[in-house]
Image (cartoon, rainbow, N blue to C red):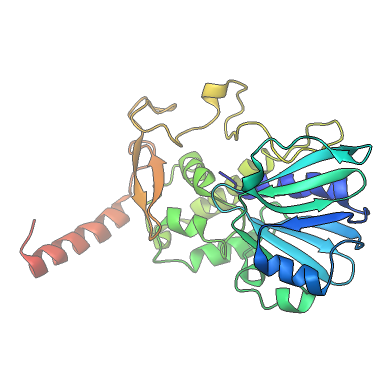
Length: 302
């Protein structure tokens, strides 16, 4: 599933391929994009740059036009070389196409991208999400102090929920959430208020480390919008790449106990953890115990 590392790699590849090129063809399955194109054609504009902001991908064109996309759970950008005026054959089916941006050398196709909008600089500043993003973990100037402050401000949230909040740190998705908590020995169901200063620092440091290790440039021309399997363990084996994510019932790589899983947050996202390596902590246990006793008194249930 696309997280900040996926979007960063896609933006890097698209920028290398398209920046400086003139758009020769534009196509879209979305009526709202087609309407903008009818009024202010994309063809003939120059692709100025492509960049990532957390889980958002922004493609800037000359003449103050910005294509903003979000992949959600299943979207992806693909690149196809154009040879003698003809692009390579697409891998996904044509009915999955949402946007096409073609230059003389490359054809970029967005498949199953569920959010795609055109903006100007002015309208982007009023966007419902992008201006409110927290420090970008893969940005050129990640502000760790600001990230720590924003994390502490979510005092009543569970740690796993806070890490997924893009206004805290931009780029963390469900896989990284569980992996970061495990690496820091923090139970993802603890309240942020119970974290020590050392734990907050570990969470921000590890977030940066894990995302950065998944966007290393693999050499060649870098024109590729997909990469290998996501890793948080420095092991080349396909089966030894993650600590806890999607390993429910399997042995913890540290202590041997079974990895647990349950839904978390309003969106009911799956969270994975080891109860031995990531204990709840006395303060949190007291909070939860008090809450449980109060519920029993109110409902008469155990």
